[in-house]
Image (cartoon, rainbow, N blue to C red):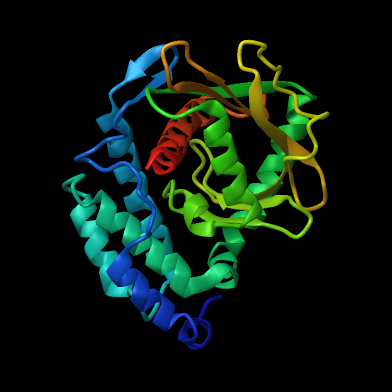
Length: 292
C-alpha cells in the first residue's frame, strides 16, 4: 500500500525533476486537437478514421488514467489530477496539458511507486492472462490497425523507434498513450510493459522480447518488407501474445504501417477490437514525434 509517508519518501528526490517538467511538459511533440497527426491516415477495418476521433479516444483514456492514479495518490499533484478529471469531462482542448500532468505524476511517483499502486491489478490480470491463454488452446486472434503517413520513410521510422527502445527513452514510450504506465528497456534487451491493454479494465504486466521472432504467431505479410516483432510473456516466461508491426514505403512518398498484436482466442472480441484504438493512439503519436 502506498502510504503518505512512503510516497513522500519516494517523491522527495523527484520533486526537482517534476518541477522542471511542469514548465516543459513531456518534451515530446505528439498530435494535438489543433494539429491532429497532420498527414496521417488511420484505418480500422479498412475504413479511414477521422484523426480527431483518435484524439477524443485519447482524451477519454486520459481521464481514466488520472482517476486510476488519483485513487491511491496522496501528496504532490493530487489537486492537479482532480482538476484534470474535471476538465477532461468536458473538452478535448486540454489533451496536451493532460499529457503533461500524467507525465509529471508518473515521474513523481516513480516506477516502484507505480508498481505498488497497481500491484493488486497486476496480480488479478496475470491470473486472467493465464486462464485466457490456457482456454485458447494455442489459438490466437489479432488486433490490426493501419497508419499511412504522407512523409518520412519506413526505415527512418523504424530507426527512430529502435533508438528510443535501445536508449530506454521512457518519455517517448509512456507518454504516447494514457494507458502506458511503465515501458522500460531491461538490461537483457526485453521491454517491461505495464499498461491497460485493449478493452481491459485492469493494468497488466508483460515482457516483450524483440529478439525472439521465431515464436511470433502473426503471419508475415510480404507486402511489408520491414518489421519489428517479438513475443509477449509473463515474468516466468509463459507466452501470452506477440506483436508484428510491419512497414513499407509508399510509391508516391511517405510510408505505411500494418500494426498487429496477437491475443489469446478466448478473450472477448471487444477486448481485441478496442486495442485497435490503443494502437492508433500510440503509433499515431510516435509517428508524429518521429516526423517532427
